[in-house]
Length: 78
Length: 195
Image 1 (spheres, chains in turn green, purple):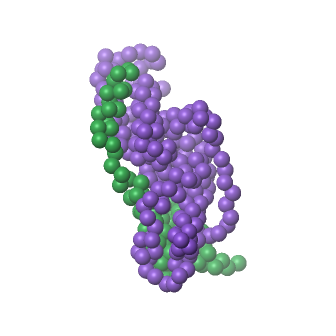
Image 2 (image 1 turned 45 degrees about the horizontal axis):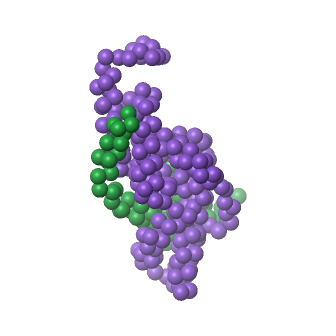
């Protein structure tokens, strides 16, 4: 039984980016991405999206004095 | 029990020092936890209150932390439980959301539909506010997994421990949560084009 390699790559894309595939599985995706511009374009996009999610959630500065306030409240209630 | 462990309830002479060392070490994770809390609660004040409640609980339970294990994950577990308690208090229960099988590349395909373009242009069409808003709109049980793994950098195993669910459930919620996020972003991008 043969599986469409692009469908196979799509179904493995998230664990591939998360680096939780086995070496054999990851090598199979590596090889497919080298040969397939359709999937490699989408791989770059998925990775960029992951970075964008993280960056936009972490770029807002922690409120001024947050840790000191936390330390004070914890010691007040200890 | 290891031979060096004190019997339960016995206070060691070094305990005061150990506790203050624990507190200092734990506070190093406060900003990381705040960023996760901000995405779980959606407001700065609620996030700050949640982190404070987390540290109050952690400092009370500090003896239960096993040195050498992942302190950030231990604190995140406490924070998750505190957040659940707050959600229960507000009677907002996590809900499941059905998901159509529209493919992992759905967002890319929607954004690129106007014509072929480089990936960086496609990603540039998504604003930070749109991403934060879409993340905040995810059902809580999907949002917490996406936030822990994609924002908090916790592993699948850490997330499973923090949430008290099997790794397989983490993977399926992560998969569905990311798909819902992309679908929401695609819808927002579509609205922008229509405006």
